[in-house]
Length: 222
Image (cartoon, rainbow, N blue to C red; front, side):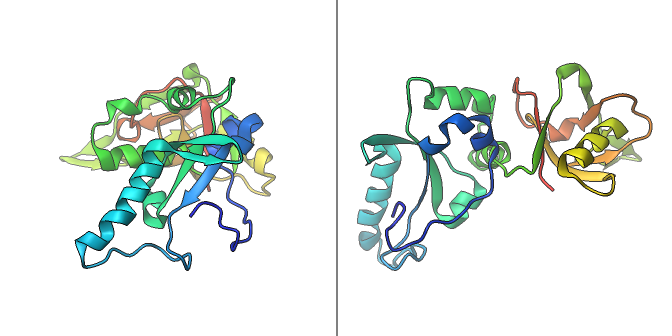
């Protein structure tokens, strides 16, 4: 059911997608599939009873929705979306279409595994607290730390003090964080403060880079 009249409006966290295309924020639609009582759809033990429901959901995902004169097309879902039976749609305009959004996301077509693909989409669309722009010459790819056959800090990169100070000012914190959870283009997970990095620099481990992208956005999550 899409935006049922029996449910009041609710606020959602700001997503990276909505921030990037904020001038088209009204063209995005979150759709949740529920039963008549707005509860999650639970499969019936009798397969024949499930078919009409599944066919209806598949038709919506394939053909889209026509609401208030706008044709909404399926855009993406994520791990949380699968858990909540929800997904995002977009109503294209002359200035914005689904292909442009997919291109902005990055090289997701490189990922052949369906679970990993959905996880990477969720990474791109994660909520954001603030954002920084990090150019290519300010970020580096480094190897994981390995000793005696064991890999340490596989998903823990490094950042310079200049980056942490920017985040502190942006979020108006009274302290300078030494560890943050952050998404940078196609990289994610944890970054820790390093006194060995000068100027403005971010270093990601090779295991933190999931796909290729030209985006320069750096999004602090928490």
